[in-house]
Structure formats: structure tokens, C-alpha cells
Amino acid sequence: MVSIAKVTISPIKNLIIVADKSGLKEMHINREPSFVDSLKSFYGGTSKEGFDTIEKTISSLEKYFKGEFTSFDNIPLNPDGTSFLKNAWNEMRGIGWGKAITYGGLASRLGTIALAVGSVCSRNRIPIIIPCHRVLGAENKLYAYGWGLEVKKYLLELEGWDVEDTPDLKNARVRRKG
Image 1: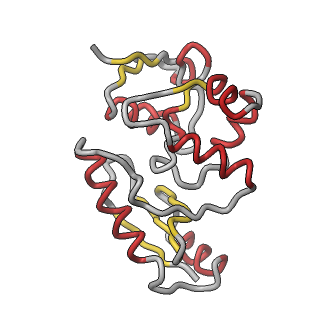
Image 2 (image 1 turned 60 degrees about the horizontal axis):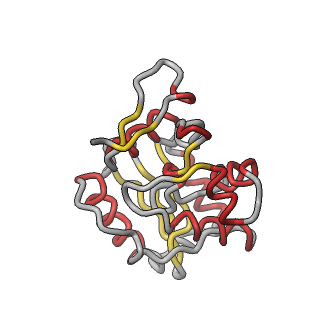
């Protein structure tokens, strides 16, 4: 059983937040109304057990989008995944506001290859909180993002990065402002 909230706190899109008694499980953007019913069915219904986590998440995200961010460390996480995925997500969680790393750099930290890091990012069901948007391609290019490159660009700019204005966002270079 999980708690599910559909909220419009994000300037990028509507968010669906899912949590259970152990922590935040997933977040989704702009899904059709039937998606919430699918989540309820998948998790065996809803309860109020995860609502405290949802409230913390909403409050933290509101601050994030206003630029009043400090950290998401107050939000307990409970994503589904293998021990490798959870270890990699934990490492990503350590990439602070205004910081970034390449897929190759994160791969070195994890003792794996850049392609595996891309796979880890694509399986991240808690974007922003587990900040896979801060993982860049070679030569600091946007490269990919599950919620779309426009969203990744927006999040990085919110955190103080300049993103090259180009029709091919995949290859847009990212530079620290200033």
C-alpha cells in the first residue's frame, strides 16, 4: 500500500508522487489520469502510511523550484532496485546543488562503465531527488534525460548552469555560469 499525490508545484510539469511507510518510491510527470489508477493497482491500493514523506517531498520541491534549495536529505527513499542500482543512486544523491559529473566520472566512482551509468539513470524513478539530471555526457553535453532534455536543461539552469542554445539539445554543452 502506498500514498499517491498528484500536485502542480513544478514549473516544468504536473507531478505524481508515490511513497510508502519506508520512504519515497517514485515520481512521474504529466501522465494521463488513468496512470494513477494503474499505480494504485500495482501497489495494491492506497493508504496514508507514506503521506508524511509526500508532504516533505512537496515542501522540499517547492523550495527547490523557488531557488531556496538546501538539500533533499530530509526525504527518506525507498526505490525498488537491485543493490547495484541503489548504490549508484546513493552516489548520485551525493552530487550537490550546482554540481555535475559525467557518465564516465560517475562510472569511475562506481567501478563500472559509462553505459552502465546511463542504464542506472534511465531506471531512476525519483528524478530531481536522486539528481540524475546532474549527470552529463562526454564533454559536458546534456546527452539524455528520462523526463526529456528540455526538463534537464531547465533544472540545470535553475541550479546555475548555462546550457548552450542549440536545436540539437542532446549535444548542447553545459558550462558553469560566471
